[in-house]
Every structure is written in C-alpha cells, then in structure tokens.
Length: 258
Image (cartoon, rainbow, N blue to C red; front, side, top):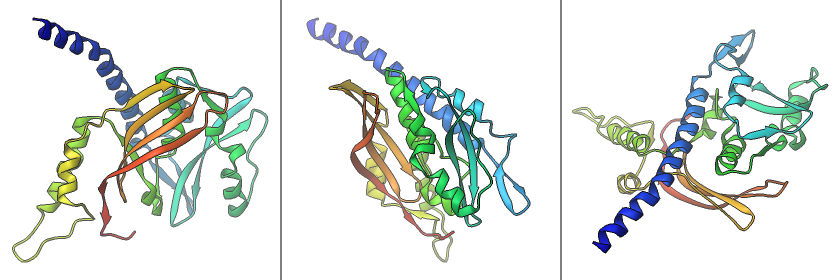
C-alpha cells in the first residue's frame, strides 16, 4: 500500500510539469506555424515579405511575455541579395526611420548590435517569459528564408508526434528505390542514429536557480543535424544568453546543392 501511495503521489506531482511542457510546446508550435505561413512576393527585381501573410504587430503579439525597451519600435526588413534573402528584426527609436542606403551600407546597418531587435527586449520574470525571450533571440528570424539562406534553417522539435514524423520521413526516403538502382534522397542520415533519436524525449526543460534560467530543447538544423542544446540566460538586466551545452543527436548529410 505504501508503494502504491508513493507512486500515486509521484504521478500527481508530475502533472503540473507535463501541463507546463505542453503549454511551452504549443506556444512554440504556434510561432513556427506562423513563420511557415509567411510568403515572399516579387516587386521589380527584388523579393519582399508578402504583407498578406506577415504582419509585424501580429507576429510580436505571440511574444506576450517579453517587453520592448521604452521608446523603441521593432520592425522587419527583408534583405534580398539575389542568391539568398532573410528577414531582419530591427529596433529604432520612435522618431527614427531607415534612410535610403546602398546594399552594403544597409547590410552593415541591419547587423549592428545596437539596431538588432533582440537587444531591445527583455523577458518577464517567469519560465514562459525567458522561453519566449530565448526563442525570439535564437529563432525569431526563421521565416521566409530564400534560396541559400535555407542552409541556416532551424526550428524546435518539442513533441513526440513531431519527432516521430521526422524519423518516419527519413525512413521513407530510404525506401525510395527502383528495380535498377536506389534513388538518392536530398538528405542522408545514419540508421542507427535515427533509431536512437526515436527513443529520446523532446520535452523542453526549464530550470531556475543561481541567477539564471537554464533551458534545454531540441533543434532541427535541417541541413546539418539535430541537436540537443542547453542555454543559460542571466536573470540580471543584461539577460545575456550563453549556450552551455550542445549534443549532436543526428548527423544530416546533404546530397543537394542549391
């Protein structure tokens, strides 16, 4: 009876953790679904974000547990460089605007730390606040990637269902063959690594203590591998992010060149 009571207490005590993890994953999936829906449209010789599929205010509303620095406004600029292109989230003071610049000057401006949007936001002191802050900083510009920019594509895997879909997709590629020869898939992985990946728990883990939040999640860097990463975020005003651990769970080999 004592053992049964202990098991029941253990199960009941884990229910809030499971519920939180599901909420965290739902938040991330909502963001990533919105990112996946963003399209580009051509204007003259360049591509820009299609305003019918992306609105900066709608996008920022997902991040309701981080605050923008007083006096600053966040906006987005899609930098199209012909062979690649990706969005930049930037922050300017309310009375400032981007002036006409040549491509080299514009690229330099968008990459200056003082204009990067992630350097002008701060999290509310909660687990979800620091998760949103980390996602905004590390994954906030993962949408509308054009051509060669896809080499840097990455997203979070946080549910077993999503993990199984990825594993099954790779296995399906292995089975594509004809009577004459095997048709090479766009990406290759090791079958043993894939079997091990299938057994992992992709649940996001968040811990608080010693002046830091520590967040562990699974990153799918679609053109290089799947990684288990742990980040440490300082709770003080700097909110500095440091990746303190990275483990490659699956090596992804490219068989294509864009």
